[in-house]
Length: 158
Image 1: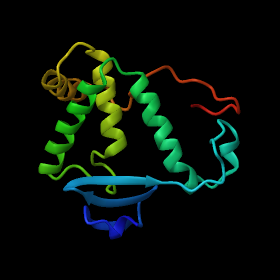
Image 2 (image 1 turned 120 degrees about the vertical axis):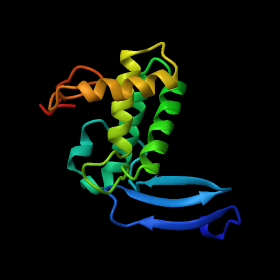
Image 3 (image 1 turned 30 degrees about the vertical axis):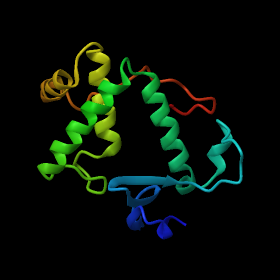
Image 4 (image 1 turned 90 degrees about the horizontal axis):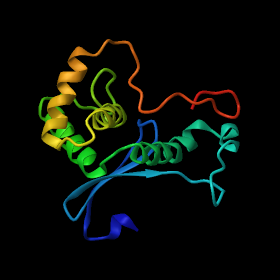
């Protein structure tokens, strides 16, 4: 159906991605559409452990995104700062969702989210500046945490 729409172009599945993704342009806007086919109306919190991990990555990714957004003081500032970081990283050739060691979707979002928490009243231009200042001095391999680590009901960290 999507391929038949005049507004859509460059439609192609990403076969080597960790999640089922369809890349396309719709009215000139680039979109990465996550896909998951489940035989459930609602994804239970715990029962998902018995399902194939490849089928769960998309819905789990959506849950993680929702959780990150709930932890942020200003979603607009987060989104704007993230777009700027990705734009600059792509221009410099250091942004890739498929190459280990480069900035990608999830890790750049988590790193920016932490900066947004550290500077809740800062504008995107300041947040971007603080991003480089903070992570240049970060004591790696200390983890970047958005909230305290919680124990799951099956004894797994969440």
